[in-house]
Amino acid sequence: MASIEAMLTQQSATLEDLHDRINSGAVPQATIHGVQDTVSTLAENLPSTSHSSAPWTMHSQTLGHLPSAVDVAVSPSTSRDDIPAMTIPRQHSTTTENLLSTGPVRALLGDFPRGMFLKTESARILPQNIRLGNLHVTAFPEIDRAETDCLVDCFFRLAHREIPILDQNHFLSCYRQFLERDTWGDIDSALCLMVLAVGAVVQNPPSTSVQGADISSPGGEYLSAAMKILVPDIMQSFWSTITLPQATLLAAKYFGYLLRPLQSWRFVHLASTNVQILLNWPQTLDEDDATAAALSRLRVSPWLIFDSDLIAEHHLPRSGIEHVVENMPLPTFHTWTPEASMFLAEISARRLFNRVHHTMYADSSGRFGMVDHTMPTQDHFQRQELRPAITNLATELDHQLETWFDLLPQHIKPDLESASSWTFEHLNILHRYHTAKDIIFRPFVMYTCNLPTKGTISTAILERCSTCVQHCCAYLSVSEMLLAQTSSVKEIICHSVFAATVVLTLSSLNQNLSSLVSDVDALQTRAVSMLQRVASKGSVIDQLVGILKVLQMKTRLLKGQVHMQTP
Image 1 (tube, one colour):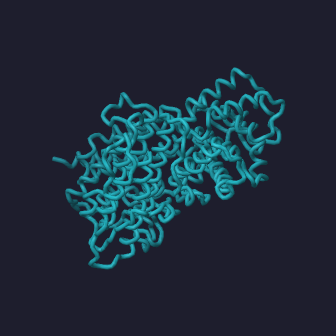
Image 2 (cartoon, helix red, strand yellow; image 1 turned 180 degrees about the horizontal axis):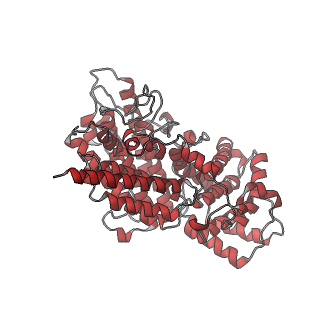
Image 3 (spheres, one colour; image 1 turned 30 degrees about the vertical axis):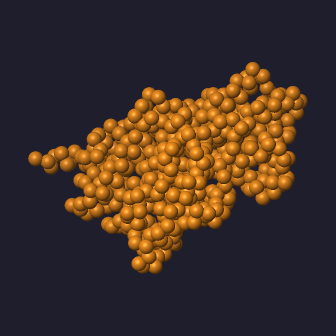
């Protein structure tokens, strides 16, 4: 993982320099110099690793395609603090709603109301036993030791692997003290109650067919009891302990398992302010190894994975912590497990995702890509020309993604050709890998779909479109298996499934790309089936199912017309 961290630092510097110089119009006639020397120095300074013997180098194709006006020399001594944070832009065009607003999709489905997904989720009513307005009448639950032991076991088997912010031995000591207490009112009790709540929801995930305002949510009695402690503490405590943001983050995960993105985001946002206090005044904490290790995991991991996923898809406000954690070192663990390795791999992957959003999809002054800031429609793929910067960036970002994949430890690195061997860790890695390929190469598909009826594309663009299509198909296979697992990010996965299906549909209807998609109807049916299994009535996922059904009907009609016109 040291290799990955060193790679992330240097790549951020290189990509930011490329980004700024292309965007500002560098001085003409400048030559590309210093890149190979910088890379060689970096390779020499990387610590040895058993994961990969190949040193990281800047992609040779990238060097060949860079404009001659770009000087990408970066000092080997560039420190993490010197590199601007490549965070997700406040406005970007990778969300589901942005995809629905593009020209090709509007031509198929018409216009959708702006902000409809956010309005839909905000209108949903929580199950009655977890409504925060009921806290004043909530009684603390009766504790059955055999039942709670089972819930703790479920938590560490099924939930902890996604976000290992707790030390299991330290928690079990806290849990034993919790069971011995006659009354609960401290923050340690709230943490124990949140672990029980999450353990209950992963042990018995609520059926989508029976979710509703009058239905009880699994573990709701523990969540409500924890909230009686957490909410006053969040409002009144300004010198935090690590336990407070830990418990608050588990509340976010609880709502993630219920596919409630807005509640998840709200608790992540609350936890982040407490963590920022800890980062600004670490002297308020007890100085010991366990606390230091817990803080190292807490200060980086949840925000780069969980928070970034939510704000990237839903355009939700940020807490400001993303500017702090982007340049922090990766967290440490006393014991290296597959879960810990996967966690670090996801953090580094999330940083790469943030770069893609930052450099290719930003919609703000000073950012570049396929964005015309004078266009009122905000359709970022409406142009009928590709800026060279997009091709250069896609090549470099793809190389960084492949480097990340190559550096994965063997025990979590999936065999791309052996689906039968994939574990939960493998599926999470592939979820990141295939989604990244999709959004890196999606601009080429959208560009092609925006061409006039008889417009043609070059072989190079066709190859990039083919890469996008192949990984969209692969993502559907991976997500089908991942949605069958216990996961708190199913809502995000559903959005990615929807986007991949839309890209495949557009490709199947385009004269230049139709040969890349063999059976789009089967793929659409598969996607509808996947989303239906997790969709609750009145949810955004339920809306996505309805849109996909209309999309499939329109596709059948259009393809039927083509077949009728073919002699």
